[in-house]
Image 1: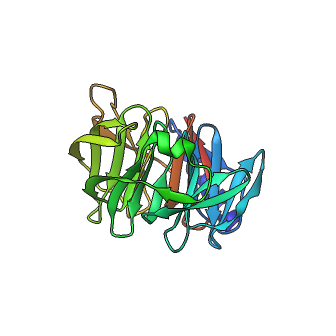
Image 2 (image 1 turned 90 degrees about the vertical axis):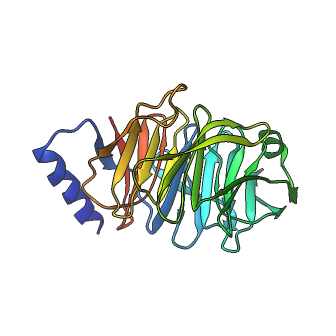
Length: 259
């Protein structure tokens, strides 16, 4: 399957030159979810084992089995199959009590956001997230929205998608008090959205197509339009950091794309 993916990429880029090009990243069998932030890249495989990338090798990240892992200014966080929330502390993951989450994102300005088991979205204040170091109860604040995937960046707010694949953005987000203001619906449809630390926003739709939101600024956090990133293989998951777009194809191949 890996050979087929490489052939498809070569075939795709022989005929047409685009602003974005993709190459094979270090591979790991069974990769299904990836996240990048602050120069770090983490991944989990189909066995729910989390890994971090160092050079060209994926190394085990703790011993806890996770179904979703995220890295960013708030550190490394994850959730397990029973939706318990963990933070990576001193070489392993420490479990928390309190609300359970099916997805978390550590890419904001120090806060952690998450989607609960019933699709409510919550925020962990940056002061609480940074200080958490041992098993205990975490106090999450509700953001009064129902979404299936939620992601934040440190610059221009947070983005999310709901069950109908509608896309939302906050006009303002305050990480120290976990306050989201001015929810707006953005044109398009997506099953997941990822916000980079530089403010770039990427979405993945139900067909495995990847799009970049252009025109984002402090005065216009929702941007202006979508530009498709021409990847010749259907994508199942993605993340973005420091000019690198990390994607996992539906066949499990990890690619790194850049302009």
